[in-house]
Length: 280
Image (cartoon, rainbow, N blue to C red):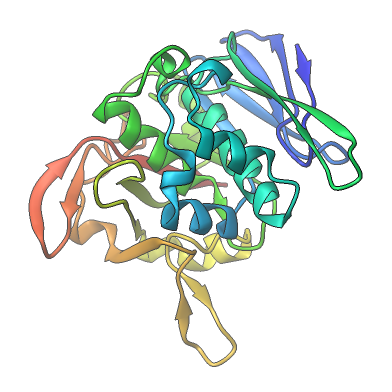
């Protein structure tokens, strides 16, 4: 199956020895990424401006179900907006669909630009972190996992970088040791809820791999280092510090943090709805 969308996910699924492979990237420069059974190595290029806009204005994208019959008027207006804000809204929902829905589902709609040209869009599911979202509002687990996924796939530069995203449970549980070998450098972890009463996103970093992450143009776990040595966060992603101070130690079998503090410094209860990222 191959689905093309504007500046978006190019997904091609083919059989492989341990599961399937997914090719994800922009139309003109696809990145080969592998899905090791239930775990996916995925290109990330969600621009922080798209994440930032929708974190601040989530009322424009509050959805009951990811199909056209369930979207409220504000959501429809946001994704059909021909302006630059519409581009950001479409980029956001494109990645939300990729995180939430499985490969058997997609989200389709049409919008019209300022020249009255229609643009049919088809955004494929990839990871299946909230599969029920196709027919109903996501529960707390789905909201948190999709939010963590969006944060993990955000790139400060809007660049595609191959990254292994992991969690303790399916569908992101790594069961192929080859993936752990190919992506040994744990970058950090992401968690949050963009659909809660008070939207939030947190990130932590692995102190030992900051230089490696930045060399791969991955800045959102540790922060973007400005020329004056000041740190800049990626939009609304709150960097809470080193992962070893807020998360349970990485599980050697899954290569993922089992849990992290829900709100460091405020609420010390743990959450298991965490996505870990790793790089070569």
